[in-house]
Length: 113
Image 1 (cartoon, rainbow, N blue to C red):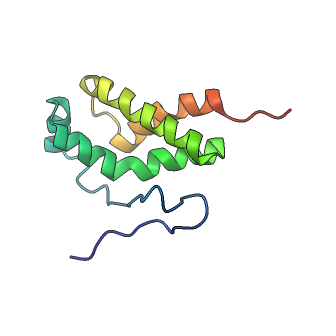
Image 2: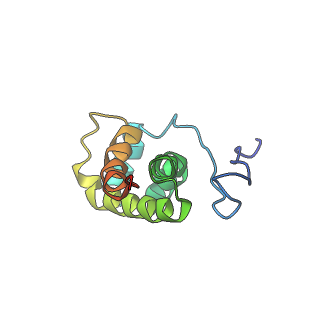
C-alpha cells in the first residue's frame, strides 16, 4: 500500500508541519464515533491524523499566518476532545470540526487598519 500523499514542503505548508492527507471514508463510521465517545486515545489520534489538514487549512487561510494557525488548530482539537460526548452524529465529523475551528479563527482574523 503506498504512503499517503503529503503537502508540498514549499509555500504556506512548510516541511515543519508534515501534514498528511487521509481519506475520510471511515471517519464517520458509527464504530469510530463510538470509540471517540468512549475516550479511546487511539481513536482521537486517528481523528487528528485524518482531519489535521482540514483544521489547519481553514485556520491558515483565515489567519494568513502559519504559526497562529497552528495554535488555533491545537485549540480546536482540544475543544473537540472536550466536546466529543456532545457530538450527536447529525453532521459529518469534518463539518463538526469546521464549526469548532471557525469561531476562534474569526476572533483572531487580521483586520484592516
